[in-house]
Length: 350
Image (cartoon, rainbow, N blue to C red; front, top):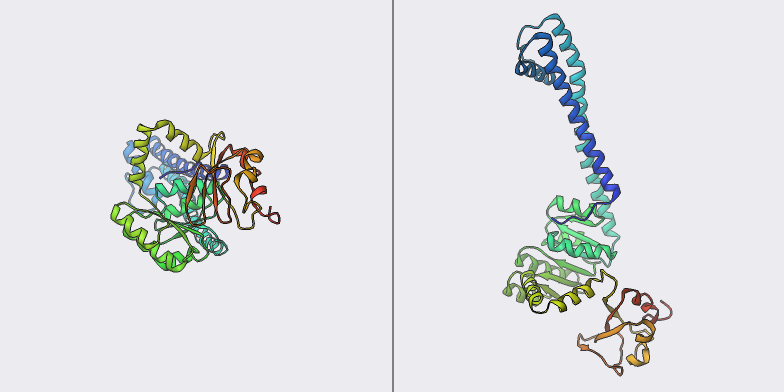
């Protein structure tokens, strides 16, 4: 499982828990060692007999003495019972409190999480929290997108919530679980379950519960990809096909691959590809690219224009007209995009 580096607060919490556990364990070991060497010194017993006597004394099981105790040995046993049993009880009580505290916190967080999900809208639902989902979720979370994860594994949901991501424990193929995740208020759903049949059911249920939902799913086989498309999935990802294509492209066109990955990730800040939606009330509507003068004002390059119908026009000329509802595919430095909203959005919202 891919894990993000934990923050300072989480690290300190884990550190204190581990330290407390080590100290309690060390206390028990010390008591057993004191008892073992104490009996060996006072009674002259072997280390095994001394250890056995120490363990049955601390466990209070009531077995008979290993050998007849001398008076100093009996006084030592009294001391061991008061001190040793006290330490053992403290350790057991502390362990029980930790378990109870964790479960109570989990129950409280479950109710708190449901309340937060109920107040969340326009979020993205992820069905499944495997490796593929975690990579996508990490990027979306860094972009401050609201996310709700559905997974049957309780530990996976705990891990998601430690990252600040909302989670629901359950089977994503159940309508009630999708509703609990707020599917009727969500804007996107990503189904990354291992089986194509499960993903197909999730897409069908999602279409019924929220017809306007944008859906992405994975497909293991070509037949499953066809069925998922028929079910209404907007995007279908085949991990093996995509991975194979990337390997082939890396061998045949390595520089092109480096360029596209650099532009898509924008991690180095020198190059960035972004899509810019043009609302119908935008001041750019009805103007040509030359009239908008975007290149001079922002230093970005418009690589393509996607019409509201989904048609893509690559390398548009200066006479290409921008219409409302279209999407601009822009290329430039990340800093060049900072002022683009001022030019794209209507004056009342910019």
